Length: 242
Image 1: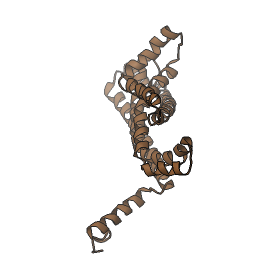
Image 2 (image 1 turned 180 degrees about the vertical axis):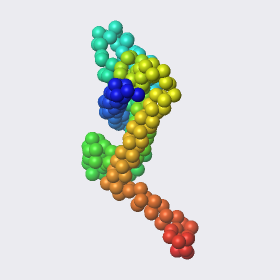
Image 3 (image 1 turned 90 degrees about the vertical axis):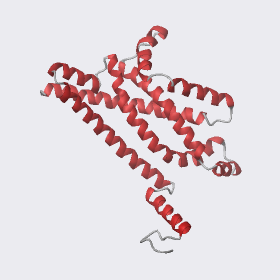
Image 4 (image 1 turned 45 degrees about the horizontal axis):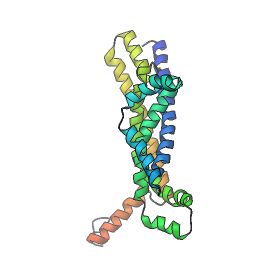
């Protein structure tokens, strides 16, 4: 490819990264806000949070992008540029999936921890901030990593609005060179490289967070080996008798 076409592809990569970061920030905010609301003691709050989750999980991200970009201006007079329209549609859609990750992780925390906070006269906000979230967040990371990779792949949908993301730029280059195989192979490799970096960063974050609450993966593995040795009578190291 010529330098000009490579520049077009790199601009598409930059646009995709902007969209990924912005929509991920919105999705994270929505995930924690609605996910916590789904564990609220008031039934009305739980119902509203559940209604949002079911609506946005049950609708197509592609149709949601169309709705935000084409219907929202007609209905409310709000004309959004493609970047913000894509951010809003993807953030709200993938945030609905994230709410279930947050809700499940919070419910998985040992009830005795919550009861201990009540015994210490902590407010609900203090119990959430000091007890629940520090234990639940490390368990959310693997699922959020998968969701973030899915969000990366979902950013290609915004190309239908004419936004110059990686998919749109790659298609322009394909039309210019008439070489589908090479161009789409390059696009696959670029998406894979970005996803690989995301995965490595999230694994590092998971390890750090688990170490912060005494759940380092190495420590957990050692604990499982020790428990197995005590249960079966087989030593954790060397296969000897304990």
